[in-house]
Length: 321
Image 1 (cartoon, rainbow, N blue to C red):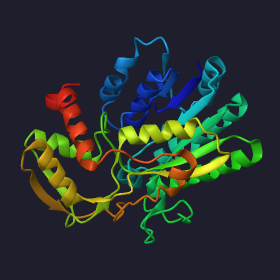
Image 2 (tube, helix red, strand yellow):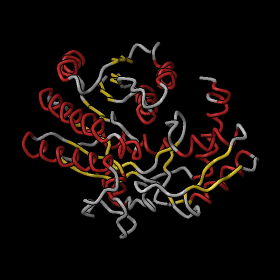
Image 3 (cartoon, rainbow, N blue to C red):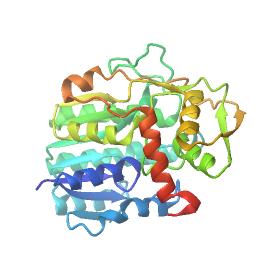
């Protein structure tokens, strides 16, 4: 049995990944500081199902605390590391850039150092479609320069990719940086549009649509995201950057139609101005992931939103945490 250390393992992607890894026979070591960017009780609920599993270990620790991080690596001896811990909000990053520099860059540097000393088999790091900014050459391939992010969040993710490359070059670490595209689904982070809309529509509250609703996103179901992440983890590639996205952008207006169809309810909608840190569209070219990992998405936006709504009704409706 091999051990996988997952940073940010109590969060949205991390908790879904942890559950699937346990099903596949891995031991999972979760590191999470239960950051109050959103209600930590939601993260507690995410990991509650795993606590009785003898192959699951939870450390409430911050990746910025390097000595603690080194001790965990030394004790648990992971074969693989999936580094997901980060401050994740593009708009909040515009207001509070220092936190994003500290966690996303400083914390990642600590993870890289710990992986180097532990001589792990492979490191998968979470990057983001935010690195592409508003690059007009869509769909976005990994070969695009990606040097004009719109938010400090995107800037930190590009920086961590550069750091990862330098560690692979100097120390021979296997590192794959995954640029995730608009993940959604069970355990969704409550600051993301799919969660916000599920909450609003099911509770008869008003939702906001930025601009005229034509802005689009490459919404990618969490089950497909997890599958791509595990395939990348199990296949060391030296240094690679890979897009993991649905490769099928959906406008806000189209997304609203899907929500109304799935819920059987008509949304109360108001318009608001677009935020400067929000890109116009995201669109992943996933050719590279198909070739190197044999991965492609399997879940349509309709099926994915139906899964999200079912989960929300069972776990979040009326604040049922």
